[in-house]
Length: 270
Ligand SMILES: C[S@@+](CC[C@H](N)C(=O)[O-])C[C@H]1O[C@@H](n2cnc3c(N)ncnc32)[C@H](O)[C@@H]1O
Image 1 (cartoon, rainbow, N blue to C red):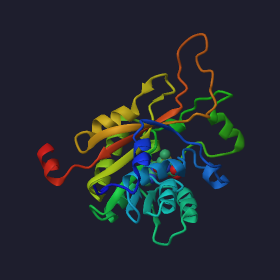
Image 2 (cartoon, protein in one colour):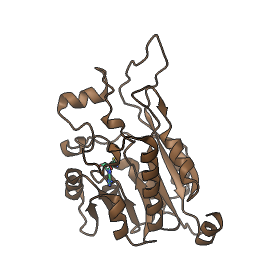
Image 3 (cartoon, helix red, strand yellow):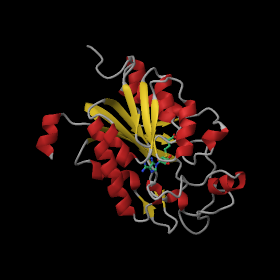
């Protein structure tokens, strides 16, 4: 039987279907570290190899310092992305080797209209996790404090077009879902979208179920077909609620996997 999805053998296919994974990424350059929430190319590569074949097109509407596009190149795929922050976009541009791969700089809500509908084979992305990077979670052991000491960026930008600067959670969710809905128009029929996202504890103590809220809200537009959990095994633990309350060290992210419906099924379900 012909493999319609990828170029993996049975063993590799089976390995990918396990619902969790650990990645030991290679060290980042100084430019890359200055981005406060980059994901490893090794993570993007695993998904790209499963959801595309050679020379197919991968897109990321929140491309940061370009990890998705760099991974696409390394896997022999084509790639492009959108990034609002010029400094991150410039790092991404420097990292890309193939002239056919590129970064558009600006607000993805605007720039998505420049991307042709039904032209993309796979979307892999990670948006801002609401405004969590802007909230002081201070503790001497925290990653936040460590970055502060090293003079590294703590959040993406002060630009009011940055989704990480939206105050209200529901407004943020609505904007994000609108962007994903628009991104889905760019995807070919029956192809896949992967969103890397996390649930987290807000600075008022409330646990925000961002991953689950996105999965639920997207259900109207696209089929949610499962998740893979990225486990960050080597992250330092913080003693948050010792001897008084349960406060988790959230050291995992959800990679939510969606599949675009066929045209006729979309009409039937809308
Ligand atoms: C979680 S990071 C993505 C990191 C990326 N996966 C990487 O490995 O470099 C989210 C990115 O979205 C960008 N961003 C925020 N609002 C945006 C917007 N309206 N349009 C495009 N990019 C935006 C931020 O600047 C940030 O780089």
